[in-house]
Amino acid sequence: MSKKVVIYDVTLRDGTQGEGISFSVPDKIKVSHKIDELGVKYIEGGWPGSNERDEGFFNQAKNEKYTNSRIVAFGSTRRAKSSCDEDLNIQALLRSETSAVTIVGKTWDFHVSEALRISNNQNLELISDSISYLSERVEEVFFDAEHFFDGYKADSKFTLDCINSAVESGAKGIVLCDTNGGTTPWEIFKIVSEIKNTHSKIVLGIHTHNDSGLGVANALAAVQAGANQVQGTINGYGERCGNANLCTIIANLKLKMGIDSVSDEQLEKLYEVSNFISEMANISNDSKAPFIGRSAFAHKGGIHVSAIVKNNLTYEHVSPEKIGNSRRILISDLAGKSNILYKLDELKITDGVSEENITEILSRLKKLENDGYEFEGVDASFELLVKTISKQYKPKIELIETEINTRQIVPSNESSARVMIRIDNEVIENTASGSGPVNALDLALRGAMVDKYPFLNEVVLTDYRVRVVGGNKGTESLVRVIIESSDKSSRWSTIGVSSDIVDASWKALIDSIEFKLMKISS
Image (cartoon, rainbow, N blue to C red; front, side, top):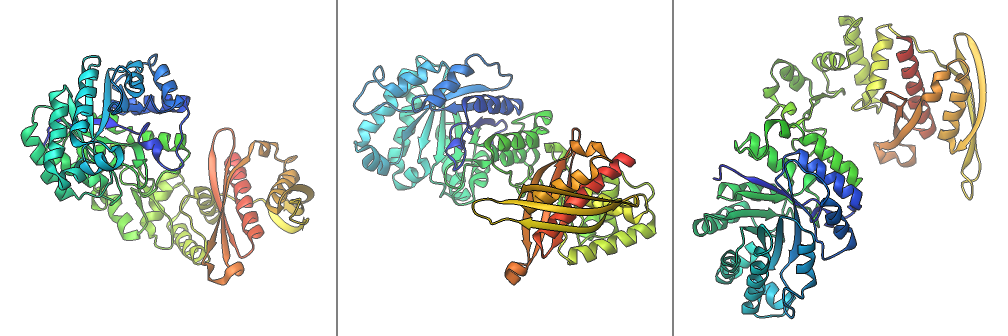
């Protein structure tokens, strides 16, 4: 097994081939700097000969300063009917002015005959000519052996001829690609071991895809067999089922295999980098992703939490802090007192909460969850419940009456709402119009209270989510509404449940306002 493994990131090239992912030039620059912070040695910026966006990235990247990373340009071997001097793709690689380039070539005879429609010998010439030409002009040239494993299984002699041609022509490294993602870890280990035996002195890379769900396993198997460069994408972005997830690979290399591809300090940035890039891609991060998922260190069962409090290794294979993640204790009908105590401590609201209060909180939570509530991720509603039960806060808003009028849905969706509430023995009534009944209710409620509590002008609704709870009753089913609110300094989430979506929304809205009032009065 290699003692040193270099990370080569392909998020900005292979990753952008994933469905729904598109980075502008400024986005790509920001992403490249974030990956640089992670300590990755190579960042493949794109294919400069293929589109104006990648050309723009390389033009701008020339003026950027990177601490840990080298920017790499990617392209293909020259076309069969043109010389390297004439080939637009080869010349675009040189114009990128990167110190390293990666050149992709066919190594599966099936692709040579079916895709390129040339002979095997002609393909070897393309590889040799392209790498010889580039290696005289660029510091490092890597040969990306496309469909290597499929090619090796079909005709190992031809595939090895392609590899040997690249090495003899000056390639500093060979990247073995499982382009279709159909190879298994045991096949990877066997084949990479054979290649390592004949090419032990060059950089031997592995590039895997996740079509069989084995992208990460295959990459690690290759490392065990002697590969010393691993390619992948942040969050596993990529075409079809994606590329091997570098977040999982880097963590496993460091924490499971003892290979320092990044430093301890850089590893602690893993969660931050993953989330930053998912935000840039406008794709929700996978909460169940190993190491960097929001749920990767989330604990719900009371027995689990009780043990975690004593020693986190009872139900965690590594400490979340090592990758910049954090432990989360979830509150649900599966919770025990340990969950409640941990959550109180996490939210720093233990003061004033007695043993009797904890018993009542647990009982109330179990009943509410049975009624369709779910307190995972709605800390504001949970804290409001705790402060109410422990008599540290008395809710101020008492609903007397609401009335909602909704006009025809087409062409207008305007609604009006009237609310009558009691606050501090004062009855207040207000009417407002909005885009739909929930917006009208929100505006009417705020309008009724803003004279008395002007700071409510700072509160804005930033997210609104609806989930059907037990949909076997069709339109009579319960709905769960979660509202995220924020002001100038903080953000909080509240919940409401009802068979009436407007009523559920009202409950979540009331909790949101009550939470703000509670924070101001405390």
